[in-house]
Length: 123
Image (cartoon, rainbow, N blue to C red; front, side, top):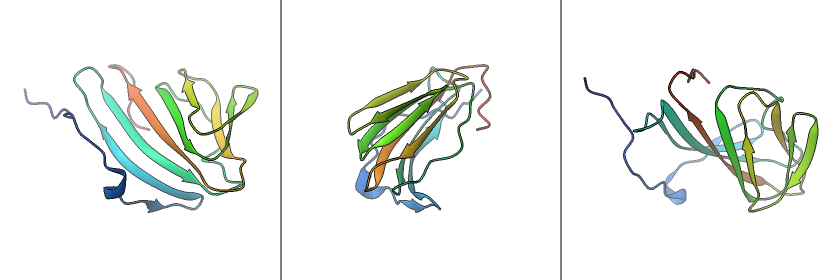
């Protein structure tokens, strides 16, 4: 049985084309099956001032957000917390969450998600 697994890779910021979105832009880095996970993905989002990535939501996979630049306000369940450059947000499965750019300039952050075996990868 042949399985297509991701191999070690380097994602060069300057070579990944930013895709415009209605709230800023997105850079897709990778998404695929690994040697230990059903799927792992990484992309970078840049939100314009005052914009939110999406409405607060929940999902079964774990997620990590790492702020590259700017200021985000993170909502986790009922708590809102400001995050500046270098901050890390870990999101456990099914926690209600969302982020909003509350700064005066763009906010850029990495989103890393992983799905163990048995968790749907449809998102």
